[in-house]
Image 1: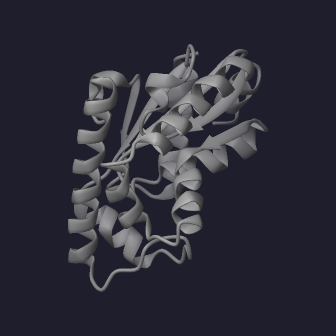
Image 2 (image 1 turned 90 degrees about the vertical axis):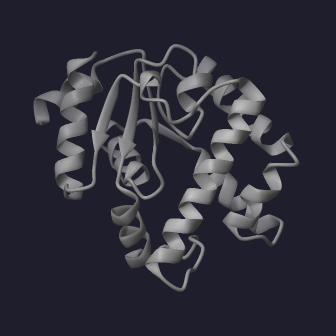
Length: 193
């Protein structure tokens, strides 16, 4: 894996987009890869959470609000596009990153089963995550959020953010450790540069 990382460290331009299912491990991967490559990470999820908190809303409530008020979605989509114009090397993590980042070298998608995703979120100690009463409640919330995102981005841009044809690499993280996911993804990415 060190050879793969070294290859990525030497590749310019290197704009990597990371998308995926809720609870698939995409943020853990993106954060770790950005540190290993010493490049900037643009994380749309953090911007969404910050805006929800600023409005004193849960993330789920904020996502529902976006159905009728698209201004914030368009702001973060434009931000990705503008940042990618000036960043030769960077990681862009978000549902629409693959669509808005200028000339991405690699577009990666992380898949996970709904049950495994819910179990991961249930065990998460992340204080920024919404709180739920059960794993089943998380599964329902994740499905509602996914459905809302599919509709929003279809309406805004006529794109399906979950269509596998949008991505160069797809990794199913359901039965893998964080370390296995990291190794598999880094190796896959390095083969494409």
